[in-house]
Length: 141
Image (cartoon, rainbow, N blue to C red; front, side, top):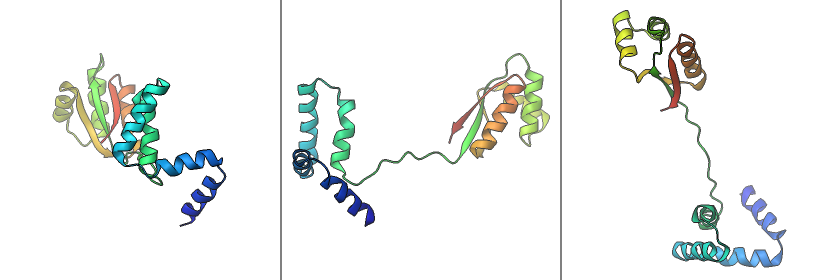
């Protein structure tokens, strides 16, 4: 409720001309907003991608787009480079795999080494594999 009051107070500080435009746009349907975006694009020679955030903000007043950072990461071994034995040892140290399974994993690159890790754990694991001579990357799940 406090956010709504703050938004109303902020809007009231806008020049009257802008407030009138905002009031008019807030009554548009999605189809009318789409047509408005096209008209802006033509009139002001802008790309639709640049105008899209304006339309989306007008379409859903009060809705905030939040970037959600992934909470689970995986480490993928892209290649083992020239140090295959060292990379196999690093894989074994970062997993519970036996020698044969670690060797098979390294030889089947690209392969996922570990999954379901926090960002810090994944970066540590990838760092160990990269230090051993492999090429490992951290990817969100």
